[in-house]
Length: 221
Length: 221
DNA sequence: GCTCCTTTGTTGGAAATCCAACATACTTTT
DNA sequence: AAAAGTATGTTGGATTTCCAACAAAGGAGC
Image: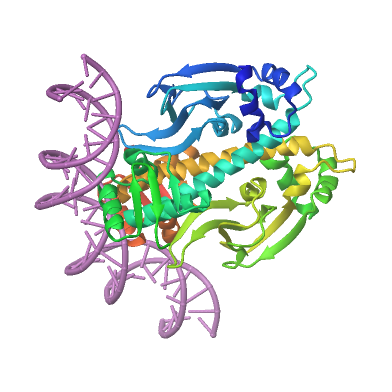
């Protein structure tokens, strides 16, 4: 676990926490680690909520699935990022969505209840942690707003371009790598994979962008 | 202002706050009230962020708009509910969306910075307020997840039914009133108003539901 | 009552998506 | 290197949405 202390101290959740305080805090938060193999579920719809997940290695996708296998990707958490925290902080009892390991993962699991309860020990940093969590959850909110903005576009091409322009803006460069393969990108944007591939090809032919796998390059923006 | 104290004390934001503490807290939060007439903007994309809005009277819709006038309704805050809080808590500097008064409004405006900063006065309840805010923002997150779930359905009919079923579930009854007119519902679900009206008519003819204006009644669920 | 204005419902043709099927490219395994 | 498996790209027809235009219903004000 100690090998991940530097990573944790650099995350928004533990911003402002001193290295010597981290170990007792983790103890106070009931921290445990788990390993999940690529493709396996981290949690499933209906599971008990109340935990906060931190990605130490690998990445986790949070998805909504219906009976027919339609899946909508809500969030993608990479190293150092949180998942499931909003469900815990909203104090609901069962998870309304599922989470899967996109690749082999090592995850840190914290108890939300222990974070929100003033503990009897000498752990004085709950309040800083709660403020950090508020910032993180609010940021997740903005991420969902972005997804909604992409999904609100009328055509597949517009959804794609809105997403790609946002990635370029966030990266600060017209060249960037996305965290999705084609199927996952389609699931995130709420479009057909095949129709999306066709649009990508058209955009490439039109000279608006170039790509190879998950690496994209916007041209003439 | 005092006439709204009971309302405020009953909101999730001020949960656990005693009546005698409310007045100094509001002062500490830099509280001001504004009146906005029906249809007028409460804030516009590009405005400075950092404030938290509380609806005292009327209701506020938060919308994303693009150049072509396409609008997507992100949230709808009624009496006692908050708006713009996620943008303030994420500490971004300008609003990425706009807000409009759906009807004549009276609004309470609080400073997010003052909430997150430990003040020098005798105001000891910042921490409770931050915890309350965390719960509220997490709940807003779930609301966005719901909207995404509706929008992720493939057809207009499926989007409608997913939304209506959720309203019935939330109300605890197959009869309920929605806070949208037809245009607003279409903007919320990301569909065409006219196509949606047609689907509503079909569903009524098929005997699956009945409605009059904004009052709905699901049948044979 | 009447008119004006807004909201809601209806319709038909153009455009886009959806879906299944298949082709091609790339990876991994053996 | 061959084979198997996965990911990506391409195509065509059925379905659905989109859009504009108009009809009908309801409300506010006179």
